[in-house]
Amino acid sequence: MSEPPYSPGLAGVIAGETTIGCVDQGKLLYRGYTIQDLAETVCFEEVAHLLLFESLPNAGELETVKQSLANYRPLPVPLISALRAIPNDVPMMDVLRSMVSFTSHFDPIEGHDEAANRQRALWLTAQIGGIIAARYRLLNGQEPLSPKDGLSHAAQILYQCHGEIPDALSEELIDLSLVLYAEHDFNASTFTGRVICSTLSDIVSGVTGAIGALKGPLHGGANEAAMEMLARFKSAEEASSWITQALANKEKVMGFGHRVYKQGDHRAVILEEKLRKLAAQKGEETWMAIYDAIKKPMTEEKKIYPNVDYPCGLTYFLLGLPLDLYTPLFVASRVTGWSAHILEQARNNRIYRPLSIYKGPKARPVPPISER
Ligand code: SDX
Image (cartoon, rainbow, N blue to C red; front, side):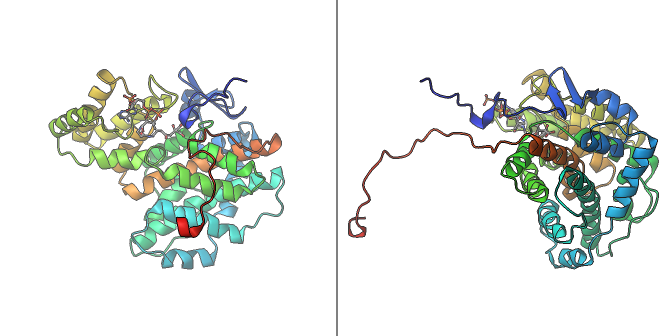
């Protein structure tokens, strides 16, 4: 019998079927809609409905989603106390991992069937936005703010961070980032959630595990790592000499490359166009010169292209957000994609259990302890 196929990192291996997202070099679809069309025409709440309820909402359904998010937003009082107890130097991604798990002890949703888990996904989406903002304010010595009626999800997160209604451009760019980050088929964190829930474990366990996976700088953590890299440089010249050395040392440059996209990430193209306008509007051309100084040799010499995290880091930075918020904002969006995949896994489940190639010692007798 021939050896089963082995592919490190499951590269190129098909691990399941999905109707949620289609990721390939030619297109990125959310349930058949191109990311280009979605980015231009819908808000994050509409994407959340598309992913969780399998269709773009009509006006009434959109209102219902917004009202559900509003109803689910208030944080449990014990959660605020728990947030106060977490040391200030704990990264926000670690806080999110703990607090998503903690808030599940105050889960208001009855039952665990598909309809209940759809509501639980909306509840988690609302809670995660509030946890991020509450932590942000406590770190700044301020009391957490209650949600303000009538704001979009993007505006609500910014309002609960800063205590003021965001300007239209900030709301538009945060909402766009939430649309772009929401779904990406069997990426590492989504696959983590599917594996966890393939054992018939619960959606909160799946989302908590997915947060752990997304934190890594090879995955969602790259938006913070990419901005940390750019922030080292005062000029494009400095960035150019650094990237030359980095490529000579075969260093991984954060925000570039992708397992699927080898000719560029559709989302990076969309976001970079908005980033350039934002930088011009704010007179931040130097940052764009530094950004391009890194991008140019990566794309022209290495043929390794920006992924969504590269423009996203600088976009959040120019909007005045601290680095520690960047990957949590990715979570605030991707929780909808994770949840949609967890619901899909439950419909046609088989527990994930791949094989491995054993490279350890051959079978051998156990020596008595006197001989060890
Ligand atoms: C996300 O999967 C998804 O869909 C993820 C995501 C989503 O929406 O869920 O799109 C979000 O995670 C985007 C990726 C964010 N990560 C980074 O920006 C970190 C830097 N990127 C690399 O670590 C890497 O490109 C990965 C992890 C993204 C992809 O890894 P692969 O597919 O395993 O590619 P590889 O590491 O095998 O690289 C192939 C070659 C290697 O060269 P050789 O060793 O063969 O000579 O390309 C080189 C790599 O060294 N390479 C890079 C590079 N990425 C690949 N060289 C320098 N800098 C890089 N960023």
